[in-house]
Length: 288
Image (tube, rainbow, N blue to C red; front, side, top):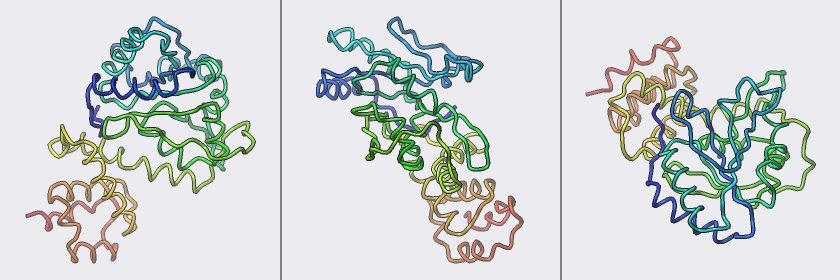
C-alpha cells in the first residue's frame, strides 16, 4: 500500500520522542499501534505489557486487526531507547503509531475506549472508529462532537501522532468538561466532515492503483497537500462523483495544477454538462 506520509527515520524520531518524554517523566507513556497495517505481514515483536483493544465479545472477530496499547519502559533509558527504535523501525512511515502521556495505565485507557469502538449515525448505521490510524485522528479531533472527543481523550495529558511530514505532533485534546457520553452518535454534518477529511487519502489510493507513475516516492506530505487542494477545488465546483474527482487529480498532477486555473475548464465545471463519472473524457483537451 501507498501512504502519503514522509518518513524521517527511526533515529530522528527517537531524539524527538526522548525529548518529549523527558518533559513529563512522571507520567505513563503508552504507544498505540494499529495492527490492521500488519495484516498478512510480519507482526511487531513486543515482549512487554500489551493490551488488545478488541479483546471483547463485540470485536473479538477483528482481534488480529486491533489497535494494541503498549506500555513504554520509561524507568530506564536504554530499554526505552530500544523500545522506541523497535516501534519506529517497524512502522517505517506507515500511519499506525501514536504516543499517549497519561496518569492512567494502558489497561485503563483501553477500558475507557471500548464503549466507543463502534459509533453510529443518526440513521442507525454502525461503523468502527479507527482510533489508531494517524491519518484519521486529526479528523476525529475536528469532526467528533466535543463531548465524544472528550470521552476519548479525557485521561490524557498529551497525544502525539507521527504527522504527514514524518515528525511527532501533539494533537489537540478536548477543551470541555462535558459529561462523557455512553456512546458516540454522529449527525449528518459530522459524517460529511469526516468523509471530506478522508477524501484525499481515498483519491491518492485510487491514483496509486490506476496511475502509479503520478504518485511520488518522496515529498509525500507535499503531494498529500496537492491532492487536498484538488479535493477542495472539486467541492468548490460541486463535482461530487469520486471518479470525476480522481480525474481532476490526474489532470492536476499532469499539469502541475496549471490546467485547473484555465477559465475554460472552470466554465465546463460550472455548467455540469458531462455525465457523472465520465469527466475524464472532457479533460483530455487540457493536457498538452
